[in-house]
Structure formats: structure tokens, C-alpha cells
Length: 494
Image 1 (cartoon, one colour):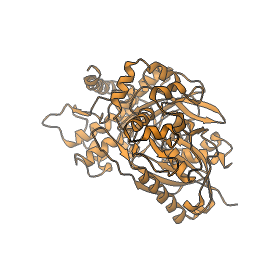
Image 2 (spheres, helix red, strand yellow):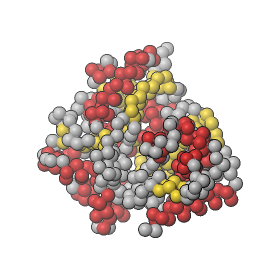
Image 3 (cartoon, one colour):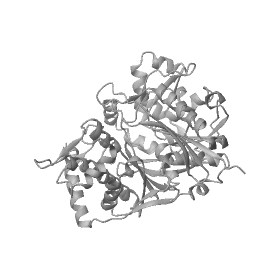
Image 4 (tube, rainbow, N blue to C red):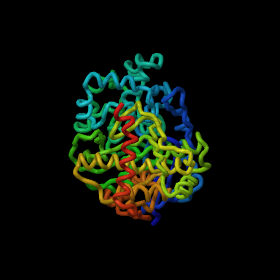
């Protein structure tokens, strides 16, 4: 009997990928296209939605063209960069403005005005989120206020809003389905993750018409059929999740206290906390881990805005390295950071500080500082920031994880993984299948298609490929971390 295969579409911040998986989670084929970034003003970050759509068609068609196993594929899952906001015309499908990316900070002043109204506690109690330009709600508000005619058209029901998953679903089904999943909805700032509904008080606060919003489905659901004209055959969309939630699933973190951290453009650490919503007391986010059969599971999340993007900056802006791989070689070429610290706050500080006004800083340089010290400091900063998150999570939950499962492009760097283990003083585990975000989407779709009985059945295929254990003494770890905290104080005491 022919083994079924599953197509996963992973639409990320810097690229769009299609990955074909076997039932046991092995990668059978991959196609990828880089996504151009647009920076029209300082602190603004945009994508062209048509680039996202055309790249989606290109990579998926490449899979069906080049991989024989794709003939056994009847279901696909979608995972995506979260919070990124698109508003389009319901009749034509044409966006009214570029996609405003999650990293974009243009709404910082609007967020500051909301904080002055003392509404943040109400927002957190409904959404688990804070007031920050990160989330979709203020981006939608900006589009309605600044794009000619957008507010009137929205109030007349002519426009639709969606995060990237929703926009792609609309296009894949030729406008038949306007829907999102519960995890992506939970990152908009408009969705009450306790009642599991779009919230009228939040819509009123941001002055957003309800008619803009999509239907919210479980992560495992019948999201509709891909029009056969796109890929040459019928394909059911059976699962959708935001990228970090998909990675949590792909890493098999389906029980409370299990934790994963993804190091891509940014870093996102999620700890499963069970089926009870709780507000973080330490400025972390409470978010949906996933919603299956109407039942919600929750996670505590910490977001670091710049992870792998710091390495890209060293390569593309400063020219200190010619490739990402060179960062590991340079970091290992020196014994320590020589007192150099790198706070990569290019788009502000995320959790647990939430300082959108912060900017990147390199400190401690002397005449004997080399590019190796600067590169090493950039990589070390990922571990310091992760420890900031884990300490806050421990204060919220009384749990410090016994092991951290990691994924993302940056964990191919052995220096990063070893330094993570040293700073956290726990083992770091890398999965056998590194494409965990796409794998999580494939697992969701596979359950919907009956390939797996449930997520636990799918997650049993998870295997550890490499394990890092601490080599640094607790005293040395504390000394390094104390210096990091001193550097952060430059921002936090202002």
C-alpha cells in the first residue's frame, strides 16, 4: 500500500518554503524562495503580498513537479509568520497596502497613547498580550487611518483582514474561504482567548469594523480545497497554525512544562502550561498553544525580536563575515568575548522588557577588540536573552525546564547551542527533523486526513539528533550574565 505524504507550506519573514513530509516526519523534498524586505521609513518593515503569493505558487509547484512522492499527497498544512497584517478587497483580492510585518514599529506612538488610557490590564486579561506595535490590531488601525478610502470601504464591508495564513487561504481557495486558525487569531490583539471570540470591546478600542475579520477555526479543521488550477490536483487544507505554535507541536511539546525555543529571524520561546489560562505577572505573553476539537491548550511565550537577523546584519551591513557559517568559526577562534556585549535591539526590546524605544548597542570595545569578539558577542546575546525569558517564566510558573528543545536556522551553529546550554545550565536538544515549524503544520493536516489518530500519535516520531550539556561553571555563568544585565540597565533605567 502506498504511504501517504503531506505538504507543508511555511511562509516566514525572510523566505517561503514548501516541504513534503513522509508519515514518519522525514523530509522528502524542499523548495524555497527568499522574500524581499521593504523599509520605506525608519522602523517600518513591509512585504509585498503579491510576492508572498507568487512565491507560494512557485515553491508548491516545484514540489509537485520534482518529487515523485507528491503524487501520494492529498492534504496540506499552512504555517506562517504571525501578526503580519494584510487588508485586501473582497471582490478583487487585491491588497490595499503592503503587508505590515510583525517587526514594524510605526504604531509605537499610538501604543503609547493607549497605555496612557490605562487599558493594558483589560487587554491582557482578555488576550494574554500587552500593548505593543508587535501585534496586528494597531497595524490594522494604521491602515484604516492612513490608506485613502480604507476606513469607508471597511465600514461598508468591502475589505477583508487577515494574517498571512488567512490571505494565502483566501487565494488558494480563490476567495471562497475567509478564515484563520485560533493561534493566529490569538496574536491579533482582538481575539479573546478565554471566550474564543472576537471581542467587541477590543474592536471598539482600536476602531476596527467586525466585518473585516475572518472566521476562526480549530488548528485541525477542514479549511477548504485548493483550487486544482493552482497545483494540478485537488488538495485539502487540513491544518493551520502560527509558526511558533506549529514549532511547539513539531517539537512534540504537548504536555505542561515542555518547552521549545525557535531561533530564526527572531527567537520565540514557548512553554506549554496546560488547559488553564493564566496571566503572566512578569510581562510575558499568554497565548494559545493550540485548539483541537474546541479545547484550548495554553502556553507562556517570550519573544526576542532579533536572533538570526543579528547575524545577517553582521554579514550584510558591516561585512564582518561573508556567510552565517563563518560566525561559528570566528566565535570559536577567541577564548571569550573580551568584555564585549551586543544588545541587538534593532527593533526595540521584546519580552520581558517591552521597550520599543530601545536600539541596538555594542559596548566594552577597546583597541584590542577584534571582529571575532563582536561576532561572538552577537551570538552570546541569544543565550542571555533566552535566560531573561526563562527566569521570567520560572517566576510565573515555578518551573524552570529540565531540557530545552531548539530549532531554527541559528541552531545549526554549534557555538550558539553550546553557549545556550552553558548559560541556561540545562541540556539543549536538537530534533532529528530540523524543519519543526513545517512539521507541526504537517502533523495538524495529517491528523485531519486520518494519517495520524491524534497529535500524540504524530509526535511519537520526534527523535533527538544532538544533545548539548553544560560545560561552564555556575560561577563563570553568573559573571557573564551579570555583565549582560548591566548592559541592559542602560535602557531600563531611562
